[in-house]
Length: 118
Image 1: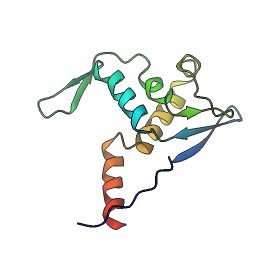
Image 2: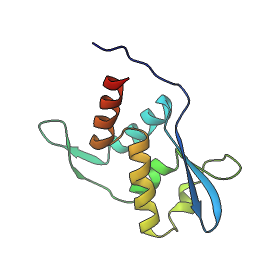
Image 3: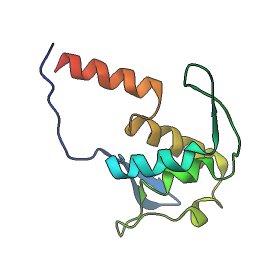
């Protein structure tokens, strides 16, 4: 087995919305647990433990983004603000946030490959 080498600095991606700077930051362990707890009651799992459907789609993207999208003052952007943004923005940010924090299959595979190659 190859050595595992990590950096504890959370990854960040700059974001600009309406000419204002934001940053999307990787979740830490507490934030990830908080997000997964919130999502637990909203999903239906199949017999393999995979998500098969959602019970409630309201605020789906902002539930994750309110834990990892920061404004120029380094404050988290409230869901109440984001919920008024166009869905195309929310979907793009949600996809990026999932990838950044390893919450989707593609990101997990990429992280595993990087760990093997380091």
